[in-house]
Amino acid sequence: MKILVSGLGGFMGREIAALAAAGYCGAELAGGVDPNGSREYPDLCVGSFDEAPTDVDCILDFSHHAATPELTAFAVKNALPLVIATTGQTAEELELIKAASKEIPLFFAANYSLGVALLVELAKRTASLFPEADVEIVETHHNRKIDAPSGTALTLAREIASVRDGARITTGRSGIGARQKGDIGVQSVRMGNIVGIHEVHVCTANQTITLRHEAHSRALFAEGALTAAAWLMSRDAGLYDMKDLMKQ
Image (tube, rainbow, N blue to C red; front, top):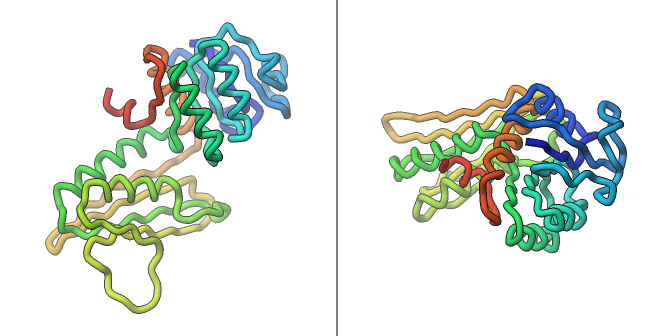
């Protein structure tokens, strides 16, 4: 599987390239696009999609959402499967992604950790089996993370809420007031250099089930993106995400 990496010069681009060099999922780095170039792969990296090679099997994007117009246009023009791992798209950029997915197979997810995807499915199953239980989500990240709660924690909360009648997502807790029935609490912790920990606590009067995922390295997101790319190769045009991958 020959891959073109958009954002090759960035941290995640380098992680993808390193895994490809090791043959992960049968990947081979065929080229990259990065306006800032690539220190590690200068001969393979070009500054724009106008210069990018087209004899590849799939594009993986770890660049910036502002690249969406050029990225999707290039993928559609050359009928190439596309894996988008950037976030923060505007409404207009999201529409471009949806339009492109009508022409090519396109995988789009905010979190490419296969472990997190499994955690979401297990959390939904557990919450549905114990409909009266209290549910609390605790996420812990490094002290430089500026958004809270994490996007993954909110995804967990929304997915759990989808299987519970009367669920209400609450973030943070302070002051005086009892926990309300149906609350799905989301708490954030920021400290040290922790890559990411997500815990889901499902607690009844007699027992507690705790589901936990801990990321040891950001390389796990590169692994998930390459797994998604390999899976996408045999799909028809359409918009896919981690739920689709987990079904297989």
